[in-house]
Length: 247
Image 1 (cartoon, helix red, strand yellow):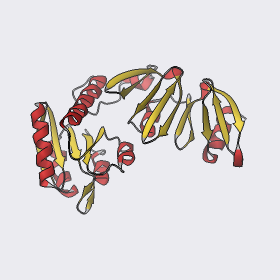
Image 2: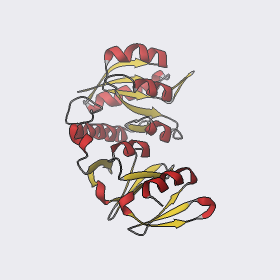
Image 3: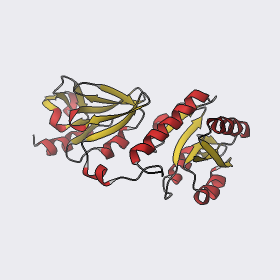
């Protein structure tokens, strides 16, 4: 059974979430806190698997607490549980597992627990987050992604580009498109070095999928990819791209 810790400065919100978690019979709530200091005084010694965390905590920031939790060993999985939807991108950049909105929905909460179970299965260990395995370090050629409540193993060689769009991350392959919640920076760390390049704040490209480089305005470029799609290159990344491709 998973062990969870709740951080929210609203007692009623904590009570509601605790009730819903206990109803799943998959989670034991082992502690609660209303502030960052109170949470950090308990979490390291309790060692919960999951921390459900509000964004705004009276005088504190849930985002700052999430940053502190990342430094723990082992670090708990963080699920933001909040009334504010505008912080989702920042939350996922901190490697949050999920982002659920108040008022809490029992089905949505169960989806979160199912996602966590699936991610734990990928790691092959009871602990979460799963450590980087030898196979991952050597790059198996597969990128596991959670899409539509399924784990899909995407062939890395088939990826044309990965981009941020409408608060989601789009993985464009030669035959499919997947919209997922994982931020671009997280996926970038999972890709084999030397095969993918950052060409824009919101785009990573498979350099083997570039068919043509098109000069554009103000010393920028567009990349014409092998599937016919077009990816912009911002001025910030032009020099790196030229060095990489030798043009």
